[in-house]
Amino acid sequence: MLASLKAAFGEPASYQPAIAGIPNGEPIPLTVVRRARVRDEAGPAASFEEVSVDPADLPAPPAKGDQVTVWGLQYTVTLVRQPDPYGWAVLVLQQRASQVLLNA
Image (cartoon, rainbow, N blue to C red; front, side, top):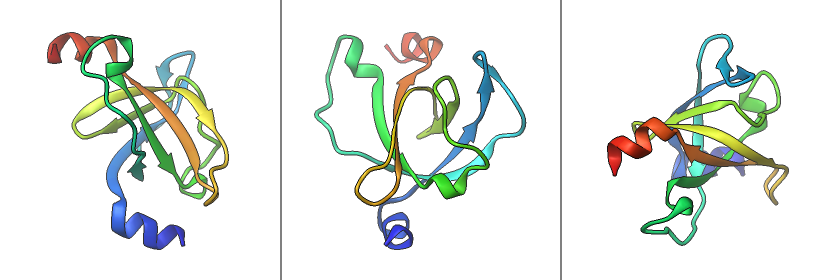
């Protein structure tokens, strides 16, 4: 089931573990599936995304503060929810502040 979801809906990303907000190690290529949500046009929620990842694709469990680059933007993991009905970890991502200012 996970392989078919990745093939149908997956998008390439890179995952960067971090310690105290500082990148640690090399970025890891990863496939993410964007979760459907109502997009806010303005306000604090406009810079948030939710993605699902297969925890087996990562060498360690995802953690708050880790970084994800996807769709040409950098995000910080703000919350990890596990598991969804398919066994994927759900990551709540916040666009990095410097990019929010650049894209405004």
